[in-house]
Image (cartoon, rainbow over all chains, first blue to last red; front, side, top):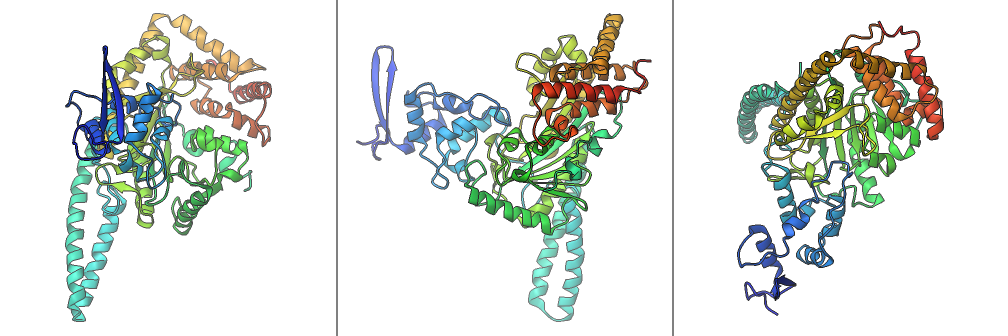
Amino acid sequence: MLCDWCKKNEAAIHIQQITGSEKKLLHICHECAAGKFKFGAGAGFNPLELAELFYDILSRKPGGAGRAAEPDSDAAAEIGRQLFPPCPCCGWTIDKLRETGRVGCADCYKSFRVVIDGALADINSRGHHTGKIPGTMISDSDGVLRDSRWELAEAVVRLNEAVAGEDFERAAVLRDRIGILRKRIAVLEKSDSEKEAAIGNAGDE
Amino acid sequence: MPATNNSLEPRVPGWLSESGRTGTPAVCSWVRLSRNLKGALFPGCAEKVQLEAVRKTISSVLRKTAILGRGRFFYVLDELSPSDRGILRERHMISPELFRDPEEAEIVINAAGDTAVTVNGRDHLAMQSFASGVHLKKLWRRVNLLDNHLGRHLEYAFDPELGYLTASPADAGTGLRAGVMLHLPALTLSGKLTQTVNALGHMRVTVQEVFGDGGRNHGDLFLLSNHDTIGKSEPEILGGLGTVTDQVIAHEMHARNEVFNKDRLALVDRISRAYGILRHSYILHGAECMDALSMVRLGIDLGMFSAVDAAVIRELALFCQPAHLAKLTGSEEMLSPTQRAACRARTARERLSGLGGES
């Protein structure tokens, strides 16, 4: 049976919607269901307000003291399972995500992205990471700045050695590295003073 | 693992016994960063063998580097007795979950006892630091430095949009949780706490009670922590929490003035009775103890007790917890509620005797 929406893919989800006395049966594919879920209104059909159903999975207190969100009905839970098959990496299921408020591995963030994005948008005012980044460590105020300065000093010494030894290939690499380090230090120094000001009212003495 | 090791002795960790300023509701603060290793299943999903591999990887990095400095202590949690794990739990070093299920979990604590790295808790890695009073900036520096050091040796699970990926998506992004413990007896007494908390609703801060039995709060201790972990930088998160903390403290100080001026005699009576309970009981239950400690602490802040140091009250608040009581009696097993109540009363009597009392 083809999907009622795109008429291309095989329908994988079969939803019965009852509005008043009218009964409507809808057959849709995974792709359309996920798209519909993500982009909201349209086609006059909301697959049982799944967003709402899964919304409170993550709003529980850290430490898991909260009450697990109960699906409205077994049918709703079943649709959740159909929409979100277990994570291919770790086998974690949407039911476990709902019960524990946790995921099984980093790939779960892809497997259950729509649900997590919805929940994060609810929990957080803006769902986009703007903090520290591994490797570049732009938010560091002590360690990286100091290390970058050390590395810069060392790179300058090594560059001079390379030039003296006519190892121009190595000198070119070092020169690039020095450029990156100088930029990074400049950014760190600038952001450091800004962040110090931002954090200044954090109750510290 | 020797149970008599320094970090697990029933004594107040140095950071908590620092004689913090009296007269302020700020008890302590902490900052925690959660991280997971790239390509490894998160602890809640991983099998024992996978957890072991993660523990070995992180442990070898911790051991080969000088992280947390000289005199640090390593503990494999499932090798510790329940009362030893309880000590760590009551000092907020490990979660209740890790207390119950310590499989393949490890913790390394610095000599000062104020900074720790936990392996295989809710996430593969949690770096946390504590301070007496509110010192979010200092604490962030400590954990950030730890994270930078460890980040050079370990590859973290990270997504450019979602940030650091954590077992609970509610922590994803910065993976940063910061908390401030405040003592708010006047807001509780005057019934203005709910009002204050509701007014803070838009400030994106979560308020939890520290000790409560469902219906009633005991000890008037509240934990303020950041609501958001994503969409803001770490300094913004901490700055926001700091601002809210300052506001709540101001509200509490205002409420203290009001309560004190409204019915001074009733307040002094209440505080003195609480002191009497701590000083003269032979059976002291946890809830009653926390309530009495709260009142005496308020009395100290108001200048009622010249001879009782706030540090003694902080010490008692910790020592009167179940695992600390067990350790005080030299037991590796937890005590029964009856034994605890007697031991708690004895501890309070002993610590407060010879201190003079009301002035």
